Image (cartoon, rainbow over all chains, first blue to last red; front, top):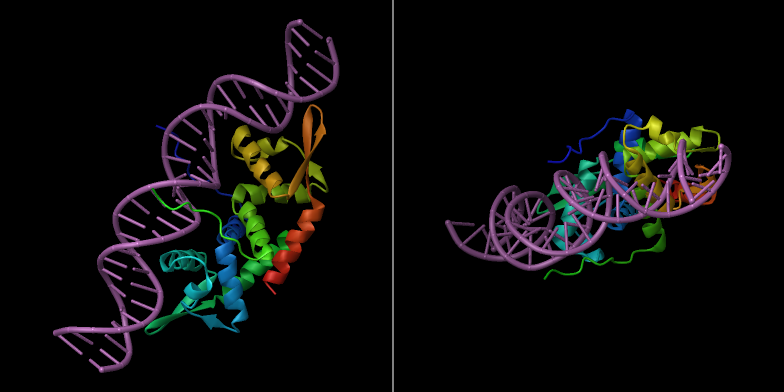
Length: 101
Length: 101
DNA sequence: ATTGCTTATCGCAAATTTACGATTAATATT
DNA sequence: AATATTAATCGTAAATTTGCGATAAGCAAT
């Protein structure tokens, strides 16, 4: 048996920044967020048409962005409209700003 | 056999931002960078004393930060002095800034 | 040449991430 | 109720990441 690879706690801000950075740490997710940013407000699974990856993979990336709190989905049957989560976006922005001085 | 999981190319800025974000996507690496930032300029393997992980793991994280271009090491025998790579730091800063508007 | 100090690398194990196709779930329309 | 559309989830495979101890490498001083 190996040791448990458990999480070690750092300062809350450090953990939060790392969490946001991790969510941003894949070009597909950056691309998605840029699309959502440009689209004045929101967007849907037209993302799948714009990205060179499969529907299920796009869905997975959306889930991660949602888990990180950077986006949110709004039911607009039969579609889902995804938007930037402005609240957390602002928090992330500030965290990165003060990190880089 | 499975498909090859090869990289798909996005815009250079998107790739660059994702690369920096990925490097920042772990609390230990954020902690290291914060220490290097505070220490006016630089630091060494006293990092190991300040972080709750082993020497080899710290070394690994330093390597990743170096590969991402965020830090650089200067031989100061028998130690190594690590510093923020100011050039790339600036580039990363700008990329994050314009990403968040 | 040997010793001592510091840091990198190796070898391994576990966990996580990325990706896909296939299937399921949800919902509106017919 | 049946159908169509959209998006999430499941199952699987491959790759990568994270972590450690042990060992090697680099360099100064003896």
